[in-house]
Length: 88
Length: 209
Image 1 (cartoon, rainbow over the protein chains, first blue to last red):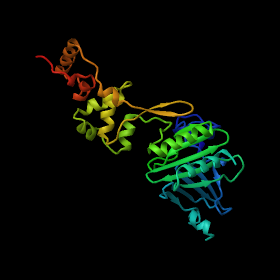
Image 2: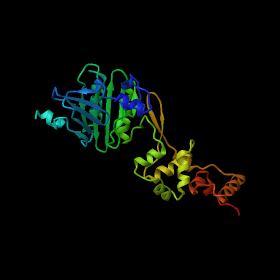
Image 3: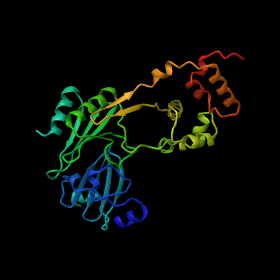
Image 4: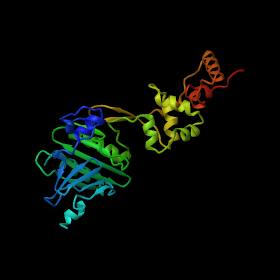
């Protein structure tokens, strides 16, 4: 992801981005935003206006603060984040 | 009790019926987050022990950015939250929008907005690229997008909304030479619209021919 951002964003990588003002570059979620997800197979990050969940199978789900699901991409095995949370 | 839970208690005391959802971090030193819902106003508060408090109006149109406003002290953050909830105001994003970005967010094309403002598209484009835009022009621009212009004076500890209408209600007198200059400009097509002239106080005078 950093290589892609280096090439296309034109914004230099800031190692302290989690504590700095937005600089226009995309960064992966920082550990300090981790929340309890209810499953050891899912990492849940709470950010302003949205929550992002990553499952161990590669599934990704982004939910906006009003409950709208913006992204719900299944993992390699076809299971979504909700499937993993349900243990399915 | 940490400063975050203290803020929650004060808000719930001051605004009975307000809905709050407090989400603690998974690890020590992480960021706390709070969703605040009071009828028409929905706010998001986060507390980072390193950087302080962040406040944002909940807007499903935008996400993926940090909080709109940051406050170092809990008292400053609380004061701002109370103001936002009482006056039903919006937070001011940290990353300012260009006029063209604002228009795009409101899903309006240059042609459509130029038509609403009764000006040429090239004039609208010039306004969007101008570095120093008149308040009256900005006010008309935002009004044509069905919004209202609010000016915010931001200080470290708090923010104030500036009332620009008072100046509009009391236009300064124009001298005959100023009126003549404006009419020369108007005849050359250099005056963008009547609002620009009104902003100078021109429409408040009977102009001797």
